[in-house]
Image (cartoon, rainbow, N blue to C red; front, top):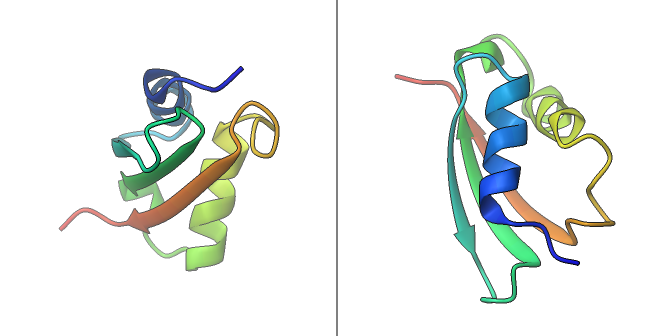
Length: 77
């Protein structure tokens, strides 16, 4: 069963302090999403480590419940 965008957003905001999440359903199938995650917690971290934090927040759902996630991370201005 596909994962709802609201569930993705909740997992990220619950697990990364101060995170703001914007999600787009890329294919209209609830299975392919793009997410932009903005969080002060990313300051000083490499892009790879920022993405790892997001994947950790999703609790192992990538590749299962959540088939595809195009991820952009950034630090607030």
